[in-house]
Structures are given as structure tokens and as C-alpha cells.
Length: 224
Image 1 (tube, helix red, strand yellow):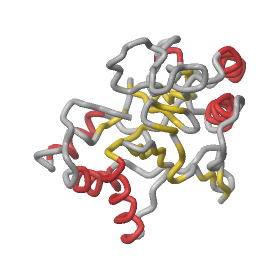
Image 2 (image 1 turned 45 degrees about the vertical axis):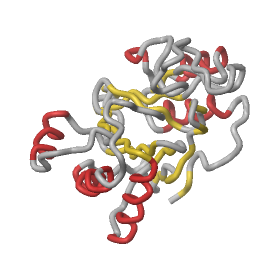
Image 3 (image 1 turned 180 degrees about the horizontal axis):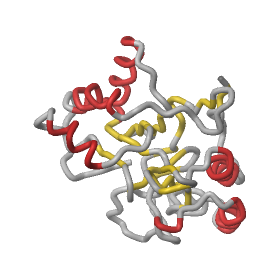
């Protein structure tokens, strides 16, 4: 295995290079999001909403449906907007398949979940982290499949969020209003594979539900 996009200091070209890696090497559809930091005032989101729930971590212009793997478009976007966050369109159709999906939860719960996975020998894929939330990338899944699994749990904390078709997550090395996005677990590309390995959602779900329930549930408030 080899590590991709390691933890390194973000430069002016870092986001563009990361976006091109996602789009061209891994075939993950991406688009530029809002900015936070760079030439923006500290903690302010470029969308202009002072109450933005995910400052610097959401699609802005263009809209989510514009996500693409076209290297020319991706390069043009980040040449024009070098500080734009890197947004992955989760579950989006691409080359006969679908883009990665994700599950996100509070950072404290995420750390506990990863410790439990490690102790049990459960392999996880890429994990993106901010000071407040962690996001685990997983193989594509549908909401019908998810609904059947969640039904067995009865109650699921609203702090555990599901990002499938029509959703999005922000990827490193962007900046949010709550701190920089980094890889807690970096994407790993195995020999002979074109994209990072991803676990199936159902292998992680039980532990993520349990650990999310151990931290205060913020309800509808979502802070990245």
C-alpha cells in the first residue's frame, strides 16, 4: 500500500492538486465549495450567511450537480478559486458506478469508534477530520439499504449523519470555520487498484451508532 495526500501544510496549489487527484486518479466527482480562510475573514463563510451551519464546507457556485471528474474543468475551477473547499458529491453516478458515500459524526465519537475498530481488527477506509466532526468514507450505498439497517436499531442519534446520493462532504486539505480538514486515516491505494479502498457501510454502522450515542446529541445543529 502507499499513502496518498499525506498530512502536509496547505499551499496555494494544495487544493487544486488534491481536487485533480480525486477527479483524475480516483474518478471521484468533485466541485469547488465555499471558502473560509485564505482571503476571507477568519471564520466567515464566503456564502455571506452569518449563521452558516457548515462554513467553508458546502457547495457554493457551481451547484452540487456540476460535480465532475473532468480534469480541465477541475483545474479551471481551482485556478480561479484557489481557496475554494474541495467538495465530494457522495453517491453521484460516475463511469457506470457511483462515487463514495460517507457517514459523519462528532469528533469525540469518531475517535472512540476508530479505537474500537482497531481493537476489533475492523478495517476502515479514508477518514477526514475537523476539530468538531469526523467523516468516514465508505463504498456506495442506497437509502433503501440504509433504512433497513437503521430499522433494526430503533433509535439513531441525529448527530450521526449519512451522506449518500445527492449529498456531499468536504475533503482535505480545505479550511472550515471550525478548523482545517485533515486526513485522520489517509486514502490508501492498493497495488492494481485505481482508487482508494473503501469499506462497506454495514461493517461500520453498529459501532458508529453506539459511539454517537455516548456524546451529547446537538439535534439539528450541524457544525463542521
